[in-house]
Every structure is written in C-alpha cells, then in structure tokens.
Picture (spheres, rainbow, N blue to C red):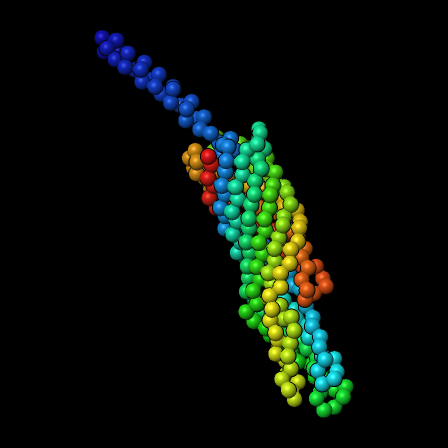
Length: 245
C-alpha cells in the first residue's frame, strides 16, 4: 500500500531529476559562446639594456656623452575582446600596456677650458626616466572546449608597438667647468612584430570565468637617440577575469 501510494510521486521526482541533470551537464563551455572579453594583470618578463649618445663642441673641441638605460621586467596590463566568426574561430583585438621609471648611467668626455687636448672623464646618473610601451595586437584565435567548464585558446597575429622613452638627448657644460648637465627629452617610435598567445579559461558560470595567458610578442623600435633598433615586448604572462556572452 505504501509503495503504491508514493509511486506516482517518486516517478515524478525521478523525471524532474533526469531532466535537470542533462541541463546542468550541458552548461555551455566558455569556448562555445559568441563574444568574449578578457582583462588581465601580469608581467613583461624580459630585461634589456640600450645605449644612446650625443656630441657637441665645447671650448672649440668635441665633447661626447653616452648613456646606458637598463629596462627591467615589470607589471603589464592587458585587455582584449573577440567575436566568433565561424566554428571554433574568433577574431580578436588585445591592447597591452607596460611602463617603468628608471635611471641611466652617464659617461662623458669634456675638454679642458684652458689646456687643449686635456679632456676630463665625467660620470653621472640621470634619474626619473620614463619608459612606456603600448601594444595593439589583432589576432585570429582558435578556441576549443576541453570540458564543460574549461577551454583553451591559441591566437596569432601582428603586434604594433608604440614606445615612449625618456633619453639624454643632449647636454650642457656650465661655463668654465668640465661638469655635465644632461638634457632629458622624450622620444617616440613604433615597431611591428608577431604576437602568439595561449590562453586557458575556467568558467565559474555561463558568463564569468577566470584564466591565464602566456604570450610571446617581440618587436623592434628605432629612436633618434640611438642607431640601434631597440627590443620591446617579448615574453608576457598574466591572469585575470573572463566574460563570455
């Protein structure tokens, strides 16, 4: 009697559970959505150094100055978005910014104001020099859902990098001395490279997730202060939030 009495209720409950389980199991993977937005904080991992030089005539003799600028690793901010065009293929655009403030080591040779061909070697430091890079990276992205919650994406495309760098563009020598006063100026340059990115996302729900990325995006830029092409970009990595729509 008891089994007969409750059988219809048990059957109804089982039917509801069976209907709910496939719906939960089929929660869309982040890689199956139409539009994505990524926001990351990470680091640009490369450390590098470049040199600049300047010359002028002082006391009717040539004077020269060289400066060496170490640019270390630092914090990177990264923002990107993409749209599915077909299948597992997206088109996307990422903007990454990197900045540092540092110092340059100065070595100068200054003529003697009285005795000809008696230059003096002068050493010093220029501080508070700003270095900033802005990278714009359009990419073709392939995204693949590994599970209902986890996906992996790989992208490749050009990297357009804009560099702004404070340099010792010139120098002055106070009258009747062999001292040096560096003249700081901001120089800008642009370069193009290739950016290759791998991104992993874990979906918290249907629209929000967390993830991380690794990217190699090297480029070269020329500034007026140096004849050498400067390396910018390089290896980058970070983690942050993911939005899917």
